[in-house]
Amino acid sequence: MITQTIACPSCKNRVTVQGNPGEKIYITCSQCYTKGFFIFPEEKLISKTTVNAIETKNLTKFYGKNKGMENLTFSVKKGEIFGFLGPNGSGKTTTIRTLLGLLKPTSGEAYIFGRSIRDDIVEIKKNIGYIPGDLNLYGHLTGKQFLDYFISLRETNATLLDELLHIFEIPSDRMIKEYSKGMKQKLGIIQAFMNDPEIVIMDEPTSGLDPLLQQSFYEVIKKEKTKGRTIFFSSHVLSEIDKICDRVAIIRDGSLVALEDIETLKRKSGKIIKAKIKENSATFPGPEDMKIKDNWIQFVVSDNIDQWIKKLAKFTILDLEISEFNLEDIFIHYYEE
Amino acid sequence: MSSTWKTSLFITMRSDENNMSHLRIAFQTMKDYWKMSIILTLIFMGIVAMYSAVYPAFKDNLQDMASTLGVKFSFIRGLEYMTTYPGFLNMELYQIFWILILGMLIGFLASSLLSKEIEAKTIDLLMSNPVSRKQIILEKYLGLIPFIILINFATLLTVYGLTVAIGEKINLGYLIMTHAVSVPYFLAIAAIGLLISVIIDEKIKASIITIAIIIGMYIFESISLLIPEYKSMGYASLTHFYNPADILIKGIVDIYGVIVLIIFIVICLIISMIYFDHKDIAIS
Image (tube, rainbow over all chains, first blue to last red; front, side, top):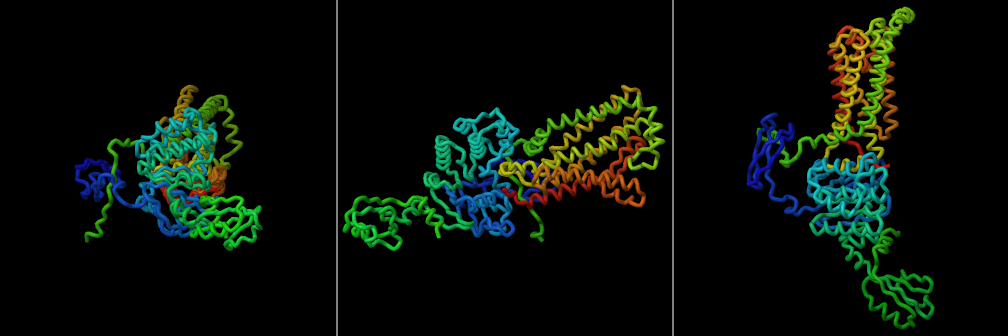
């Protein structure tokens, strides 16, 4: 048996009702006579369902004739750290702002925990934390006043506030306009995580943080992930995506060009072989895309590595490097054309 | 048919939720304007004090002034009563400082309600909270109401206090009505400011446009009073629906005017909400 306080959708009159999980009851409001129903929740609704944290279907946004993003289809699984990679102007921020209901999509759909951003945005925001790329806070408030204001606007308790204030120290009694960029960024992180939301959407959150704080920030993210929270992380800094994300989407010119596990992406992309030989570099029968730079032979192999090593063995090798593709190489690969 | 029997989903509420939390944006708006409200209120009390205090010295000259100006210059309502104390207050205080200058100040404040947040981009974070766009509009507007009430009440008290102090007579009921009916008038002005602040993202632009509208309306009303052929122009002005001269001097309240103002407020709020609901909060 669950006891639940519910409110009439039109006059907000409250009633306390009892029922079993999943049970549907019909109610007529005693004040405004609105007829309605209420379904008792199945324990924790969100954790039980298998819906994706974010799901977009052909999400498109045009600013007049200018394209922000086009036909973006991807899904973010619950409990993963999802990297959203692309240079400035590629459509990352447009996507994030559309997901948050700041921009209205031109066409297509997006769902956050199964709820449509078109119809249910207020309900969605109860479970979202957000760090905007261009973080602007109320300069005339102190850090404490700002946090108090935002806590009062959210409908859940700020359970992580103390912990976050301990990690990211801010001068909470000073006016925000006196804060440095790093302090503001810390405050931005605190407000996004303080309610322990199901998902945190971040647009370039580490800009302005010193390396030490970046490290603490990654740790907070990783800890949230172990609790089953979802992180959507946009960045143009490849190394940090590489370091913390499970999967990455690469966006280019408003469209998705890749969506993969970071490890798979690297494996698929193959290995880079660099060799320096005593003989004339040009005489080595390498693949077509072989490059010669400062007498170093350089080429990419995706499968048969053995064949190339044996070919190289016929020469006098002065130096040899075999390395994995890093995210930067992959990124450049997708952006070259 | 059962399918036409519309049902709606009742909303889950946390039982410990504070009822007042729904007005947090309104409270914050009120706090943001608090200092400005106090300063403006004090300035207005000062202006009132000045006018009431000079009346005894001015009294004898008013007769001459009235005959010089003549009834022809009737673009200020109630000018013909300027030789009486309520008429003097009406001319010096209510027709200019009250409906025009305070109107402009309220318009100025209202025109920054949304544009300030959009220009400073703080709207991004505000909207990441579980609040609807309609709620933001409504609460921002509500946040300005305490100032309108405060300045009304303070000015009313000052006027009455000083009237007693200088030994003049004024009908307290008429005075209270003059201030009470000015509330819907100022709310209508604030509604214009709000609407402009939703449409125009730049604070300064929004303020200039709002103030231009208020001055424009005042000029329209003046022209309509001055030139009988243009009498209908007055309907384009909000001042047409609030006449402190009639209320303060004769005790006549234009009930239809009040209704028009209230309808105007509702329409402005609805348009603001619809417009904001469809607006892209773009980054520039």
